[in-house]
Length: 367
Image (cartoon, rainbow, N blue to C red; front, top):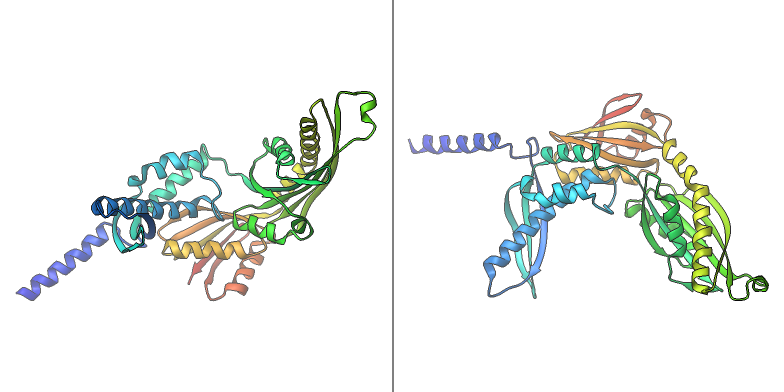
């Protein structure tokens, strides 16, 4: 009788788990999140609650990233901050501590949290279809000099931002470049790709005082700026566009004259390459890429890493993830969907099996 009771109890627990959709085939998937907080010997309970809460948030944030971006996330849209990350209880359920221990003056905790990926996927779709407009990420970096002396100013980049702000590009500051970066931009492009940029704008700008200009404006300084600007695709290091411009700035204050000259030259150069960037964005073939049996967020991240390493892939975004099946919008420099599927199988044959291929879609199984 006792054995029958234990058997019945076991079956009820199993059925209960199925009703709550726990596991990769349900509405939620377990994601590992971690947090480090200050160790508080006089408030152990509160410290653990703080670490637990932050680790849950980290798990949700990790899941959000795979829906938001094809690469390392550079910036969260406001709607994501407000409606998802700001309301984390709506998207997480049961969780338990995987490991926790003190590290000197800190306390570290890993928590296995169930994230409601189906709800998260639907919410992300709503955000992307309404307030969030997907833009092409572009990293902007420059080397600027005045009178032969390298400066740390951003006057050239300001001109580029001003010109391109009306285009569907998300521009990010790539910082100041060295001469080595200009001679060999591989490291700059690698960093840009890692950070989620599709293109890199590299500007080499200089400004010098225009000799003889003071004869008609004795109290003013005239600066003449020159810029060589090029746009490189992060996926394959190919030159997308280039421009060379010059511009003069006149002002009673030399620093303002420098700013006018550098900003104007770089703004004009950016105007020359804007449409070429747009053409490069639209030149890649776009199709649906569905992968079945992904099963976990970890495997989904691995799948995105595989897409990211293919040089033919210009951009991709996760548009749907439900019942362990992921669907991406993919832009790739290939002639057909068949060519894309062949390249994946050739390089990652151990990970995928082809299920079907059409003119504008590829469906595979993640093995």
